[in-house]
Image (cartoon, rainbow, N blue to C red; front, side, top):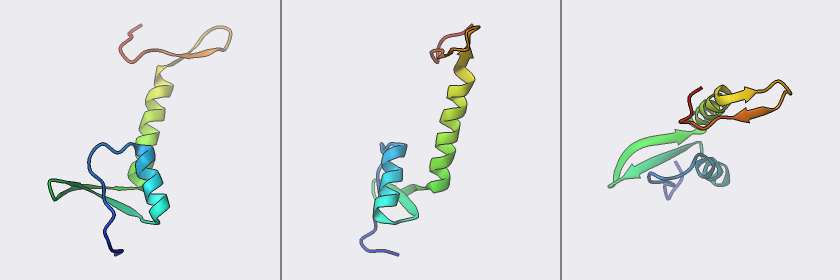
Length: 78
């Protein structure tokens, strides 16, 4: 384990967490709240978050007759 321990609190974006893992050369980023470990972030969790985001985005994509792809708003129902 490296010292001092590199950790984060809630509110870090996926991109920020990924950059921190890469910049610091660490594999696991602890998430601390009120001096308590509440979770960890690693590359697998980041990849799953990206996959989920892309899956949602693609499922909202619509292709019209000209082949143009547009995204519907999250609240929009058709």
